[in-house]
Length: 115
Image: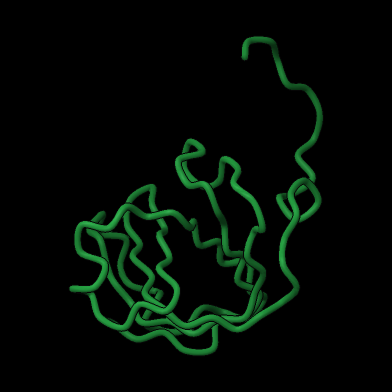
């Protein structure tokens, strides 16, 4: 592309089309510079080897459930989650270095437990 970007970032919800708020269940895999969401997945073996496509952004105003407040050990952790939020409607450049074509912005995490 080249060039330079100037200005203040106004947020993904203002820059990309997102679906209306919805409740999703699935598996969240988080670690150093990744936050990968696999909606409707029910077991870690189901996502083994799967290429992540959805970046999970936790923008909830409540503190995250205790399960998500693990020590910053640099390891990857996997959780079963249920969250309310908005899913991007088209591909973009989300997450760490724009590696994820979609994004789920969680406004409320309902449950989270280690997988």
